[in-house]
Image 1 (cartoon, rainbow, N blue to C red):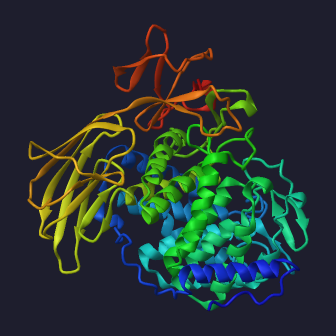
Image 2: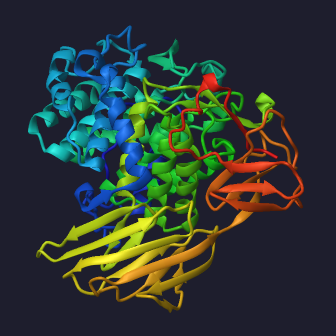
Image 3: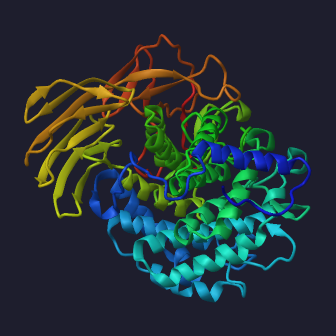
Length: 590
């Protein structure tokens, strides 16, 4: 049986916590952290993948931005005042972004080692970032230090630098574990939270009981995600007790009633997924999945970005949350194999992540088209959220590289198409090298060439999303029968060197109803070409009818038949016109 927090909880909460522990143990048969994980995907490392094409272009532009003056060692460490009471936030996110950009691009960062070397000089005497509070907790401080833990854990996973574990341990023990008992009384009653305040960067709004509370409601659970990442390496019972106290409180929250920040909620769910992987408990996956479905219905915008808070539709989007949603969707697909989660991730990547990456490589915020702001057009809200989202962009793009391929036993999954090369080696030295050529989703063909194979028989599973139609599969010029299952085309016996595999298809051109019924009208719809949302750049808003025929003109440009209306994707490759000073806008609701 697991240990639980020993602090006596308020009346009513104690019973709920006992039930929480009971449910967790029943769902996992009280399994140990060493539970057999047979059936999960094997790890593919960054060194196994050479990414090319548009994704590499994005990574390198973001990498350049993260090596500009603002993020260099002399400037990245902020005072309490300069950070806006987010100690460790800028520093941790910067480390995280640099590590992921570096690993995905195979380019050594210029300033990261010096940033790491300077960290001890910026910790307080207790060994973490920020002010030492007595008898109270600051949720923004926990969030910021959570990003420090995330960044340092990723750095340690890469470099195996043992001195990093000392810093991880001091932050985890001296800030998070010292707060044991406080998490169980974190204020979650909507009546005591300020639910209609907040700017693009959150601020401390009030003190309630033992807690200094942020306008980014629930951001304490960003810290939980960092602590769970630390637990992956430290595995102490003290951390485990605190993590489960935090999880218990998080699962009691109604995100809509409290108007929780979507970024905080999604990050916490990613923490649940990591904890499930560490412990083997699928209970945490189930809970993350429930909140994902809630996010899709009440937290996601019509172009697959996010509302900054649940049930606050007159706000703005935040690439931190968009990237969280992408990562979580992939993780849910990986653990459940439900094809709709793979599809969710692809829609988020092309319409959310790719729309919010700006010309300088950073990431900015957009508006939220819909009834609340009386606007059906997608526009720039903030050119660049340089204090948070630009750094998280590195994580999102880096993970997109890692997610290009998955391996399970003798099967290679290709869930997302990117120009790239996969080169893997088994423990006994056998190798398999495969090159992928594509300009998906803008053209209608993906090819694979087996460059080397001393592994033996390999099964390929190629993504077959809902919008892909009229598919044909050829091996060495000969068409083969399509064998599809659970959102993938299955190709057996891919063994011969120089085998040439060609998947051709047509992207479906279709209209789709709106996703958030609370912020749209029933007669509105969106237009897609494959995974790409199409929009209209026009000074005047127009209304289309469901029966209006849309025809392709080539180069992902489309015309509404018998009307002077032209549609093109909201996707762009860091186009300079997507900036506030250009009056850019694109109608996406019709």
